[in-house]
Length: 221
Image (cartoon, rainbow, N blue to C red):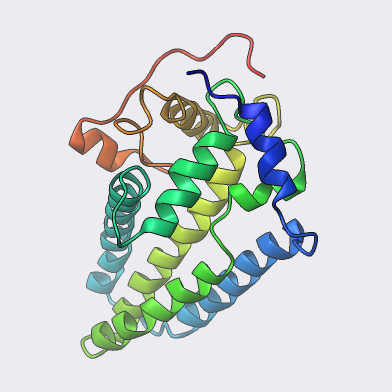
Protein backbone atom coordinates (compact mmCIF):
# COMPACT_ATOMS: atom_id res chain seq x y z
CA UNK A 1 0.00 0.00 0.00
CA UNK A 2 1.38 3.43 -0.96
CA UNK A 3 2.04 5.80 1.93
CA UNK A 4 0.19 9.13 1.77
CA UNK A 5 2.79 11.58 3.05
CA UNK A 6 0.58 14.65 2.61
CA UNK A 7 -2.21 13.09 4.68
CA UNK A 8 0.22 12.12 7.43
CA UNK A 9 1.65 15.63 7.53
CA UNK A 10 -1.81 17.07 8.03
CA UNK A 11 -2.57 14.64 10.87
CA UNK A 12 0.80 15.20 12.53
CA UNK A 13 0.55 18.99 12.40
CA UNK A 14 -2.96 18.84 13.82
CA UNK A 15 -1.58 16.97 16.83
CA UNK A 16 1.13 19.53 17.65
CA UNK A 17 0.30 21.58 20.73
CA UNK A 18 -0.62 25.18 20.01
CA UNK A 19 1.96 26.11 22.65
CA UNK A 20 4.79 24.57 20.63
CA UNK A 21 7.34 27.14 19.45
CA UNK A 22 9.81 25.87 16.86
CA UNK A 23 12.28 28.71 17.41
CA UNK A 24 12.24 28.15 21.17
CA UNK A 25 12.81 24.42 20.57
CA UNK A 26 15.78 24.92 18.27
CA UNK A 27 17.12 27.85 20.29
CA UNK A 28 17.03 25.95 23.57
CA UNK A 29 18.98 23.03 22.10
CA UNK A 30 21.58 25.33 20.53
CA UNK A 31 22.03 27.74 23.45
CA UNK A 32 22.14 25.07 26.17
CA UNK A 33 24.48 22.90 24.11
CA UNK A 34 26.85 25.77 23.31
CA UNK A 35 26.82 26.88 26.96
CA UNK A 36 27.95 23.43 28.17
CA UNK A 37 30.45 23.26 25.30
CA UNK A 38 31.92 26.61 26.36
CA UNK A 39 32.21 25.41 29.96
CA UNK A 40 34.04 22.26 28.87
CA UNK A 41 36.48 24.23 26.73
CA UNK A 42 37.10 26.64 29.60
CA UNK A 43 38.57 23.70 31.57
CA UNK A 44 41.48 23.41 29.12
CA UNK A 45 44.91 24.43 30.32
CA UNK A 46 48.29 23.72 28.71
CA UNK A 47 47.04 20.78 26.67
CA UNK A 48 49.71 18.15 26.10
CA UNK A 49 50.17 16.44 22.73
CA UNK A 50 48.64 13.10 23.76
CA UNK A 51 45.57 14.80 25.22
CA UNK A 52 44.58 16.09 21.78
CA UNK A 53 43.96 12.46 20.81
CA UNK A 54 40.72 12.74 22.79
CA UNK A 55 39.23 14.61 19.81
CA UNK A 56 39.62 11.91 17.11
CA UNK A 57 38.65 9.29 19.69
CA UNK A 58 35.51 11.27 20.51
CA UNK A 59 34.66 11.64 16.81
CA UNK A 60 34.88 7.89 16.26
CA UNK A 61 32.87 7.12 19.42
CA UNK A 62 30.14 9.58 18.46
CA UNK A 63 30.02 8.30 14.88
CA UNK A 64 29.64 4.75 16.19
CA UNK A 65 26.99 5.81 18.71
CA UNK A 66 25.01 7.75 16.11
CA UNK A 67 25.09 4.80 13.71
CA UNK A 68 24.26 2.17 16.34
CA UNK A 69 21.39 4.10 17.95
CA UNK A 70 19.89 5.00 14.58
CA UNK A 71 20.15 1.51 13.11
CA UNK A 72 19.28 -0.47 16.24
CA UNK A 73 16.63 1.63 17.98
CA UNK A 74 15.44 3.97 15.22
CA UNK A 75 14.39 1.19 12.85
CA UNK A 76 13.81 -1.86 15.04
CA UNK A 77 11.32 -1.96 17.88
CA UNK A 78 12.83 -2.70 21.30
CA UNK A 79 11.38 -2.19 24.76
CA UNK A 80 14.35 0.04 25.50
CA UNK A 81 14.16 2.86 22.99
CA UNK A 82 10.48 2.38 22.12
CA UNK A 83 9.88 6.15 22.18
CA UNK A 84 12.75 6.75 19.78
CA UNK A 85 11.39 4.07 17.42
CA UNK A 86 7.94 5.67 17.43
CA UNK A 87 9.26 9.17 16.83
CA UNK A 88 11.76 8.09 14.19
CA UNK A 89 10.41 5.16 12.18
CA UNK A 90 6.81 6.05 12.96
CA UNK A 91 6.72 9.84 12.73
CA UNK A 92 9.87 11.07 11.00
CA UNK A 93 9.88 8.52 8.17
CA UNK A 94 6.15 8.96 7.65
CA UNK A 95 6.48 12.75 7.52
CA UNK A 96 9.42 12.71 5.09
CA UNK A 97 9.55 10.39 2.07
CA UNK A 98 12.43 10.35 -0.40
CA UNK A 99 10.32 12.34 -2.88
CA UNK A 100 9.14 14.77 -0.16
CA UNK A 101 12.20 15.62 1.91
CA UNK A 102 11.91 19.37 2.60
CA UNK A 103 10.01 20.70 5.59
CA UNK A 104 7.41 23.31 4.73
CA UNK A 105 7.08 25.41 7.88
CA UNK A 106 8.99 26.05 11.08
CA UNK A 107 6.62 23.90 13.15
CA UNK A 108 7.78 20.92 11.11
CA UNK A 109 11.04 21.16 13.07
CA UNK A 110 9.28 19.20 15.80
CA UNK A 111 9.62 16.06 13.69
CA UNK A 112 13.23 16.83 12.73
CA UNK A 113 14.91 17.83 16.00
CA UNK A 114 15.27 15.55 18.97
CA UNK A 115 12.99 16.48 21.90
CA UNK A 116 14.39 19.52 23.69
CA UNK A 117 14.82 17.60 26.96
CA UNK A 118 17.23 15.17 25.30
CA UNK A 119 20.07 17.73 25.17
CA UNK A 120 19.72 18.03 28.96
CA UNK A 121 19.81 14.25 29.38
CA UNK A 122 22.79 13.98 27.02
CA UNK A 123 24.76 16.62 28.94
CA UNK A 124 23.84 14.95 32.24
CA UNK A 125 25.20 11.70 30.85
CA UNK A 126 28.49 13.42 30.07
CA UNK A 127 28.95 14.41 33.72
CA UNK A 128 30.02 10.99 35.07
CA UNK A 129 32.11 10.41 31.95
CA UNK A 130 33.89 13.72 32.52
CA UNK A 131 34.47 12.86 36.18
CA UNK A 132 36.00 9.45 35.41
CA UNK A 133 38.30 10.63 32.62
CA UNK A 134 39.33 13.74 34.57
CA UNK A 135 40.93 11.48 37.18
CA UNK A 136 43.55 10.83 34.50
CA UNK A 137 43.46 14.18 32.68
CA UNK A 138 41.11 17.15 32.96
CA UNK A 139 42.13 18.28 29.48
CA UNK A 140 41.39 14.90 27.93
CA UNK A 141 38.05 14.73 29.74
CA UNK A 142 37.05 18.19 28.52
CA UNK A 143 38.13 17.53 24.94
CA UNK A 144 36.46 14.11 24.79
CA UNK A 145 33.15 15.33 26.23
CA UNK A 146 33.22 18.50 24.13
CA UNK A 147 33.71 16.39 21.00
CA UNK A 148 30.73 14.19 21.88
CA UNK A 149 28.57 17.22 22.59
CA UNK A 150 29.79 18.92 19.42
CA UNK A 151 28.79 15.78 17.54
CA UNK A 152 25.27 15.99 18.99
CA UNK A 153 24.87 19.63 17.94
CA UNK A 154 26.35 18.96 14.51
CA UNK A 155 23.92 16.07 14.05
CA UNK A 156 20.98 18.36 14.79
CA UNK A 157 22.25 21.05 12.40
CA UNK A 158 23.06 18.63 9.57
CA UNK A 159 19.74 16.84 9.95
CA UNK A 160 17.86 20.13 9.67
CA UNK A 161 19.92 21.06 6.59
CA UNK A 162 19.21 17.66 5.03
CA UNK A 163 15.51 18.53 5.10
CA UNK A 164 15.93 21.91 3.41
CA UNK A 165 14.83 22.39 -0.20
CA UNK A 166 17.63 21.29 -2.54
CA UNK A 167 18.05 24.82 -3.91
CA UNK A 168 18.56 26.38 -0.47
CA UNK A 169 22.11 27.86 -0.15
CA UNK A 170 22.93 25.70 2.89
CA UNK A 171 21.70 22.54 1.18
CA UNK A 172 24.02 23.30 -1.74
CA UNK A 173 27.17 23.41 0.40
CA UNK A 174 29.36 20.55 -0.87
CA UNK A 175 29.45 18.26 2.17
CA UNK A 176 25.89 18.93 3.25
CA UNK A 177 24.73 18.26 -0.32
CA UNK A 178 26.43 14.86 -0.25
CA UNK A 179 24.99 13.93 3.12
CA UNK A 180 21.58 15.25 2.11
CA UNK A 181 21.60 12.86 -0.83
CA UNK A 182 22.59 9.92 1.37
CA UNK A 183 19.83 10.84 3.80
CA UNK A 184 17.30 11.12 0.99
CA UNK A 185 18.19 7.60 -0.11
CA UNK A 186 17.82 6.46 3.51
CA UNK A 187 14.23 7.75 3.40
CA UNK A 188 13.36 5.37 0.59
CA UNK A 189 11.10 2.75 2.13
CA UNK A 190 13.08 -0.11 0.60
CA UNK A 191 16.34 1.23 2.05
CA UNK A 192 15.51 2.86 5.37
CA UNK A 193 16.10 -0.24 7.52
CA UNK A 194 19.35 -1.20 5.83
CA UNK A 195 21.28 1.77 4.42
CA UNK A 196 22.81 5.18 5.25
CA UNK A 197 22.44 5.54 9.01
CA UNK A 198 25.15 8.20 9.49
CA UNK A 199 23.94 11.79 8.97
CA UNK A 200 27.15 13.81 9.41
CA UNK A 201 29.98 11.58 8.18
CA UNK A 202 29.38 8.05 6.80
CA UNK A 203 32.33 6.33 8.51
CA UNK A 204 30.37 3.50 10.17
CA UNK A 205 28.17 3.05 7.11
CA UNK A 206 31.37 2.50 5.12
CA UNK A 207 32.88 0.14 7.69
CA UNK A 208 29.69 -1.91 8.05
CA UNK A 209 28.94 -2.03 4.33
CA UNK A 210 25.65 -0.14 4.68
CA UNK A 211 26.68 2.88 2.60
CA UNK A 212 24.49 3.27 -0.48
CA UNK A 213 24.83 5.90 -3.22
CA UNK A 214 22.84 6.66 -6.35
CA UNK A 215 23.09 9.72 -8.64
CA UNK A 216 21.08 12.74 -7.56
CA UNK A 217 17.80 13.60 -9.22
CA UNK A 218 18.62 16.21 -11.90
CA UNK A 219 15.37 18.02 -11.06
CA UNK A 220 15.38 18.17 -7.23
CA UNK A 221 12.48 19.55 -5.29
